[in-house]
Image 1 (tube, rainbow, N blue to C red):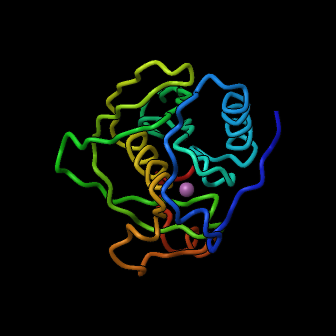
Image 2 (cartoon, rainbow, N blue to C red):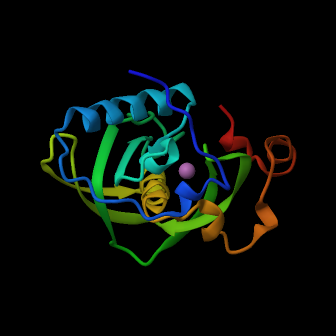
Length: 179
Ligand code: NI
């Protein structure tokens, strides 16, 4: 296992649509998935896509709560998505804050579908179909965007909320965001 270097804004690999993965069981693909998981955890990300670690392949790892801060908490299932497709199951859009390991120190408000269906393969190549809502759905849409060369900045309706961390804490953080 290894912690991989993260490509940041301006690196052309972040803007190239990623290739489908054909030989999911190949040792180099399995090693890449393990390294992506380790890299995501090292940098305390809730998701990571292969183009962010300089590999233009349709692989994303997600480890995000469905409803952060909800009463009783919720688990953080590790989900590996290979060759994912996203189908919105609602027209309801929700706007909330996002950041990105490839866009360091900036966050902004982005609209996403509130509930989605995901059709993908798991790390063994088996079909993986799941429904996701709320924050989990947001993270999956963010990571899927990385696989088509799109960044959260592209999804912002306006840059009025584009914010550095200190200003976020000073002007934007709501009490329920804390802790
Ligand atoms: Ni990102």
